[in-house]
Structures are given as structure tokens and as C-alpha cells.
Length: 276
Image 1: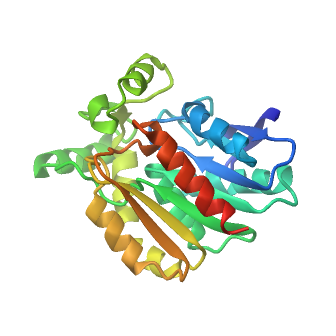
Image 2 (image 1 turned 180 degrees about the vertical axis):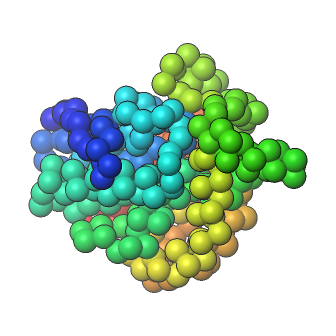
Image 3 (image 1 turned 60 degrees about the horizontal axis):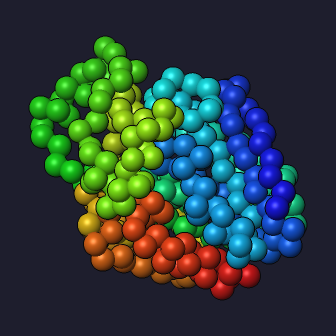
């Protein structure tokens, strides 16, 4: 297994951290885009499974996350995240030259991959969207939305602790304990991120109509963070002729960190290998 850590720059010069894990006879490569507040280091189990199946994996921390530079969990505009993903994609193409390339996005990373895929990037063979954050599942009362919009103008990068409990993300106690002990795992939001992401949500119908490459959507039916109904609606609007959706009963938002996650791992790898 070849392993490599690397640094690269986004469009505006922000320094980002990436990594590659490539088995000796890799058949295909998958780029992993983590969720909001998360980082690439938390996908080790999934990457190990991929390696055993002959899949190379690349991952990175986008700005404000993990070991990358930038204001913690914030941005100047949502396009910054897309710029980070574009730079990562260029790295993937260079480092896995000759291998078919897929992208997997979880939660906010799923939103990023969706928008990126709608632009038909050269060489992208398919997208795996895991619990994509296309709409907030938790009820947000009007006054909180108004507060965040006001703070967006006055204090855009103010860090506000989220009310989401780790038990709402996964039923796996070991996963919960690891997340609680991880200094790089963020449990806050910023007004700028909230407002910019809400703006992106308003464009999703147009995004779905522009995605024509193969797509796999994975939904945890007990997801309280990202609304399963919004996932289903986006899936129905996808222009792709090769699309599939898999529902996991009782599973919550962190499908790759849930109990019985090996089932999810297997589903992803089988879908990818079936398109080679």
C-alpha cells in the first residue's frame, strides 16, 4: 500500500492538506470529500475497506477544517469550497493518472460534490452522495434564522456551538466517543457558512437538472441532520440516466460511522466496481 500526504493550494492561495492511499494493483480511485466540521482523518475505516477491494482513495481537508488553513468552519463565499474541490480534483487527476476516478461526498461534502458534478468535470466517472446536506433536517425556528442572518452581516465568522448531539449522528458509541475526543472535529457553525449554504440550497433544482453522470445516493432513514425527503426529491430531479438510491433503515446521518457500516462500505464499492 502506497501512502502519501501532500499539500496544495486552492485558487486564492489557501493551503490545503491531502492524502493518498493506493494499493499495489489499484483498479480505480475514489476522492473523498468530508462533511462540515469533519476532516479526512475520520474516514480511515472506509479507506481501509476500499484498499482491501483494490480501490485507491484520496482525501483532503477543505478550508477551515482539519489540517488545512482558513478560518475555522467558515468561508468568504460558498464558491471557496468549490474552488477547494476543484484544486483537489486536479491533484487526484495528477496522482492517479490512468485510473478511473469517482468522487464521494458526505453531508456538506455531498452538496459540494453535487454542484461540482453538475459542471461535468473532465474525467469524473461517477458520484457517490452519502447523506448529502441538501436541506436541514432539524427544525430551525424563525428567530434563530433571523439571528444568523443578522450576525452574517455584523459577525460573519463568529463561532456558534451547534445543538446537534453526537448520538443524533450515529448509534455507534465508539464513534461518538472518538468524535468527542477528536480536537479536529468541529461542533460549531458560523453565520457566513449558514447563509451561504442556504443560498446554495435554493439552486438545487437547477443543479440536479445538470447532473448527467452516474450517481449513487445513500440515505439513512433516521437522519435528523440532513432531510431524507429533500434527498429523495433531488434524486427524482437528477437528469442522470444511471442513478440509484439505497435506503438504510434505522441508520442516522454518519452512514460511514454507523453500526453495521461495513454494509454501507460494501454497497459503495460494489457500485463503483460495477461501472468499470
